[in-house]
Structure formats: structure tokens, C-alpha cells
Image 1 (cartoon, rainbow, N blue to C red):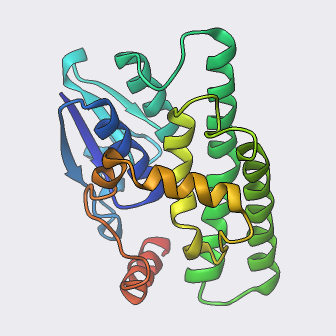
Image 2: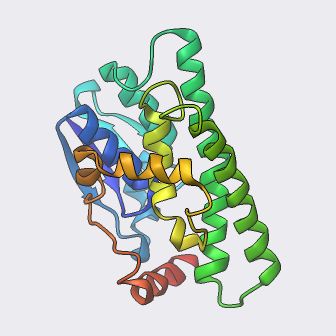
Length: 222
């Protein structure tokens, strides 16, 4: 049994989608970010960085893992799914996973903050991070012109990247200029496990709840 500590963010959705894809039994602990539950003493024992997601593997003597990319690798290795054993194929998956962890997530996260949440709209910062997201999307679009997935087959690289691309509108970056990335997004979105994972702990309608999301985000940033 996996205990998942999560919230409705792209990084949180990565792990719930993965758990649905590999069909492991799991329980959900919803962390209220706007109430700073991620900074509680109990949660900091699981993740000293005070960020979601985190997991506890009760079948492995309560072994805990934090950082979404590390969690995906752990679950892939535990089940033998979505991470090839061949060294070369494995390396390709990990390269694209690190591309998401080091590039897409941090840059799009900053675009979200300056475009949606910052009390002062700093045009330089908005353009700087939106342009970097567009550059990264362009890299993926070129890759996806020659491959159905980021690696040779559907993998944890796609699972990690999809929730961020799925929230592109929130960063003010449209997908239309990236036809191959758009195709990839639409195909992955149709997967039943992806749909189920996006509902854990709750599905967020970015277009219908903008004011509420912004209010909660501003509270988390204080």
C-alpha cells in the first residue's frame, strides 16, 4: 500500500497519475497548502523541504520518498513499469524526466506566479518566464515531431511533463503554436488512468475557479 500525500498541483498530479497507471493500491492524504499543512512537523518528517507530493510505502517498512521525480522513479522501479531496463532506453527516459524537473516545472511555475499571483504585474518577469516556457515547449514540439512520446514509448517522462503542459493556460502560454505538443497532450489526456489521476485529491477547473485559486495561491505565497 502506498500512502500519498498530495494537493491539486501539477507535481501532485504526476504521482496520482502514476499510481493509477501502475494500478497500485494507495490511500490519499490531502494536504491543504493554503493552511500550511505542508509545513507541519509531521509532514516535514516525510519531506524536509515542506513541499508536496510525498509517499510512504507501507510494504517497505514505511519507507518514504519525496520529490516528484524521485517518487516516479521509485514507483517505476518497484513495479517494473514505464522505465526501461535497457541502459540506453532508460537514459533517454531519465534525460526527458530531468528536462521537466529542471526546466519545464521551475520555469512554468515562475510564469504562473508572475502572470497570475504577483500583486504587482512586472512585465519583464512575465515575459522572461513565459518566453522560456515557450522555448522549452518548442524543444518538446521538435522532439514530438519525430516520436509519439518524449522517449521511445510512454514513460515516466510523459507522466511528469503532462500535468504542466495541461496547465499551460494558467501560465498564459497557449498550446496552438506547438502542434506536436498539442497532439501529445490530447492523446495522453484521453488515457483513463490520466483522467482518474487528475481527480486526486480533487480536479481543478482552471477556467471556472480563477478567483478562488488566485486567493489561495496568494495566501500560500505570504
